[in-house]
Length: 260
Image (cartoon, rainbow, N blue to C red):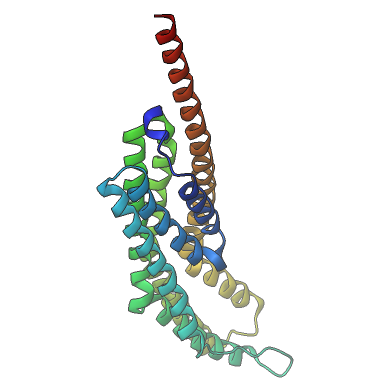
């Protein structure tokens, strides 16, 4: 660990980054977390040591924020026209299939429109640029930024980018599911138990790519952000230790001068 580097470490910036990465875990406030991390990277570049990768990390947080906002806007805008499915004793399975087909068409559009497809690209690129910022800290301070955090961030970048093919694969699966629903209705076998079970299984298979990608990204992100927040907390301890060592060195130097 480079003590001379940590003597200048900005404590307030450390708290901003710590809070920012913790908030990014929580879905409803992750936008606030992304804003705070962007501010934190900017302040690190101004108050600690200047590095082009810190500037890249700041841009990365902004891109990640853009991806989150775009995904949320896509859900809100398209959600205004979400087809409803009516259930109850008066609704036949044929009618339920017709309603399901409309819902599947809506989901396919929601997954494949430009806003939806751009979001994972922005998120993946943003995380990659942030990774560069952590690499800069590791290069400057050595073991103070562990390699496992860099590796976890690489996994996050890959999983974020996989959101694009996962959405496309899910949309294709839903198209096949829609065709199956139409075939079941035309065959007149909707009142038998077997098609109903098969319908459920095929629906689960259709959405599986996106479900798996989302769960993996959340789990890896949860672990990564907690470890990053803990590391920024430790940086404050490193700063205090570096200051104490510096004072101790000055006192020893003063004693030597007095002896001489």
